[in-house]
Image 1: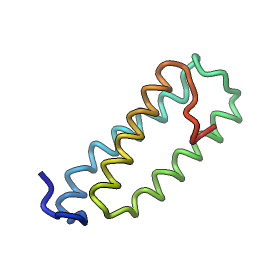
Image 2 (image 1 turned 135 degrees about the vertical axis):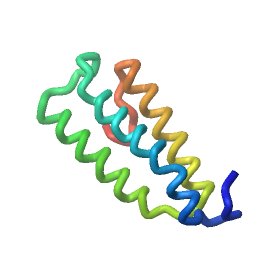
Image 3 (image 1 turned 180 degrees about the vertical axis):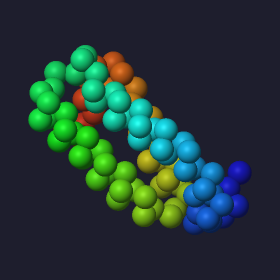
Image 4 (image 1 turned 90 degrees about the vertical axis):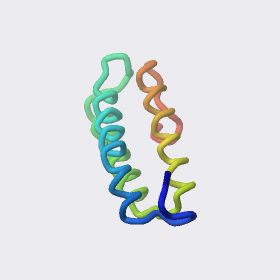
Length: 90
């Protein structure tokens, strides 16, 4: 359970850190999949986009928005594993 009611505390952020890093690494690994119809340049471009998205999301402090971003990341990872490219990084 979160300590903050609306805004994330330092403890909340520290608790989610491992989950976020794991999701980030899994998404980057999934972009290397041979199931995706991407050239090397396109793969590098998509990885840069993912990095930018995670950097922008790192500034988020609302508990509800953080949870929504995690759900979006997990959904995008499931699409990548199926060989599809999620809309937000197309």
